Length: 365
Image (cartoon, rainbow, N blue to C red; front, top):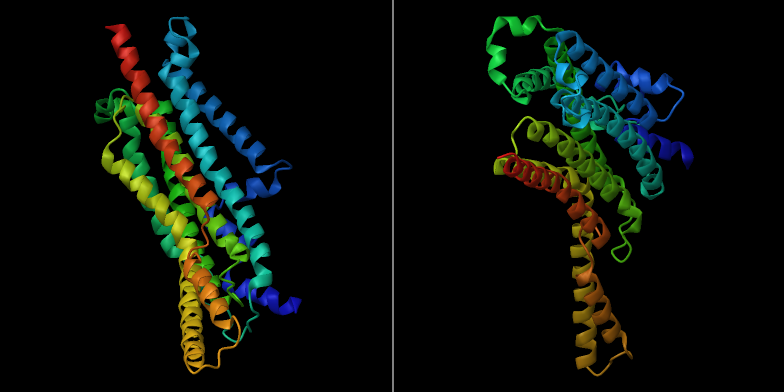
């Protein structure tokens, strides 16, 4: 019944194309993606180039590109140039990956829809928390906190952070622009992160609407795993780009606590969308095993009485073994292998940069 299935989608999860939800999460750049006659990647590329030009233009006004213009330093060795590329890539990456994640969510929902049972709209669907839409006040608070945090980190990306203790520093247009971009980056990142977590919880609740769990074929449940993997990749990729900014500022040794935090959050991103369906699979498995073992006991009693019916007992035992060995998570070996590879992205970035930095220091001694 198509209408019932459409109701299932609207109640369980807000439509990914909802203009109101997009505007709540990304009020300015959402309209940019919607109106631009190009792919999100092309729009992000254009945004990144615009930011790079703005960074370098203001640095030129402040006189920070003298060594570059005189030819004393090659463009790829100039700190200002590298910093402009890294921060612009990070900012555009936050927006583009979120846009692609929304498109992936729509695909996942369409794939999952046939496996969901229809529900009525008796509850009205008015509970914003229940459908995964972030609360506007919380979203605003999270965005403000994120903006303040990134603004506080901006001085650490300079070779001489102590310059921010001098009032004249704040008269430089490039410094003010850096702080403004940092605030915008923190605002966008924290809001999209919070909205994604809310949506992950709603996506996990869809497991309650799955009609039937086939323990021997979990393929219909792959959308849950795909969303988790996509979320983990998004934040590990952005963490990799962000780490380059710290390394370029002279922080070559990544603190273990930061690395542990990133890995832990990636694990949460992977598991949060699949927790609900994992519980459904486990419950179905325990129920099926209990039923099979009851049948096995009955069949064994029949066999002991001399009334055995061919190979039914053997069939039941074989089926029980297969059910007992069935996976309880919709995560196959390929998904776990990809996740492991994604985990190596920030670690590899830090290690390679640290090794290269150490080698350069030895050569310059």
